[in-house]
Image (cartoon, rainbow, N blue to C red; front, side, top):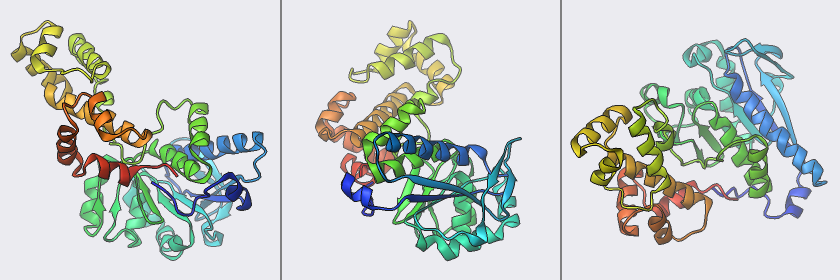
Length: 340
């Protein structure tokens, strides 16, 4: 996902002023969606300072009323600036809320602020259900947008002119960004760091925060590996783990059943009951998921990636991608690549 406004070199970055990040909070906001990005930008500043880099992130919390703001949990954060006094310059991130419809009713000034100031920021982002504020402001009409999977249908029903894509971690439409639930705020903040200062710094911050994988924006909210961690009979759980470690093999259902010590019929029945999908569908989804990571995180040719994840050919992978994402592998790489 290249950012035309991002610096092309360290010299370009050094010539830019500090990057202002405003995180909008309000009573009932999801605390993690503010704290996560703050931690990302704070860690980035530590690395920049250690490298004697002159550029830094300047992060401030903004709220309709400044002062302590109670989150959805027992934690409160202190907003330094009133929303009415905040003028976006570089990056805005609007936190979501568990009771988002109630938050919309209680905070119409946030909707109005979004409507008036969205075009002023280089990047204007919503986090999780914060997407409802942008939709209410009419900023997403005719555009793609994502949100937490549990409220995607509500978003689409309430704002039919928005093209809701519930399966993405985050999406970009020009200067507008929308993201999925809670921890996706960290993914989006890392993508911003990558745009501003390069991939190495973003990965260093991810390692510093002990994040297993810096997920690219187009990756599904529903991981096949995460699905494989749901409670199940031990034999089925072991097979799922083995599948992910051996995607380059043929992985035919009969061979999997034999490995699990079951008849094929019994294996398919137990696997489908425990996992929620057939063994063949699970294998296909796992291959697609691994392929998306390789497409976005490496420069490997599509044919090489298809071979590594167990597709018989790049044409088979193309057909699988077209069914699952309505995109070819090359189109997927072009649309969702986050490299600056």
